[in-house]
Length: 315
Image (tube, rainbow, N blue to C red; front, top):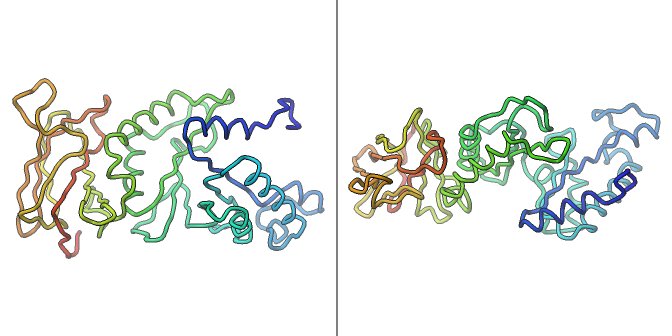
């Protein structure tokens, strides 16, 4: 508020997001170069003086800042503690939880990684964070990942039990660049069609069979398989064989957000998947009749019910 703007920018941002039903998350950095400068120490994230546990004056400032952030703006939903270590200072996390026991803390409260994914399912809560391009902040002429690649990252994250945070970098005028907006819209359309397999789910017995990824309902009665194929065109049929799924007489197979009765402009042809059960797994023939946008490369989700896990080594 001491800037030329003269108003509480954070308050205005939080209120604007709340009006749109968006949960409020804040990032807090315990280290403070100005405090180190005032104390006669060089600016560093590696020294003992940069840690709240080693610097009592810094810790007193941290507490004031945290109390301001967590009590001045109504209910805060999430907090990320940005510190030099992979696991942020538990002193800061515990103080934040003292102020709000229901606060979700990602970095500092759960395993949190930037720009990479684990190679296995993690059963405890965890989060990964990705940029659309190569920078967290807005950079003119940025090189962006395409929406399909971002959707693939989202799928792999959920298949391994994690939360996926996608970074957005507004420009100097506070506007989300068109390239980023287009990707958000494509991801949003895909998620609208397939949200059942992304939200309120858990990892399945295995995360994937090669390029086919899995999630399951919380009661494990439903398994979702995310399938993709290069250059898979609209109304084209492809066959998939899944060895980790064991079918039965009660097995049913559907495609999320895809009408099984008819296809657009082809009223005498049904896109209903055809499947056959063998001892080694299950074959599924799928027609790609879903087209939420101009991209044909976004994966489809096959929904399996009445199945079980074939407990064998999947290569």
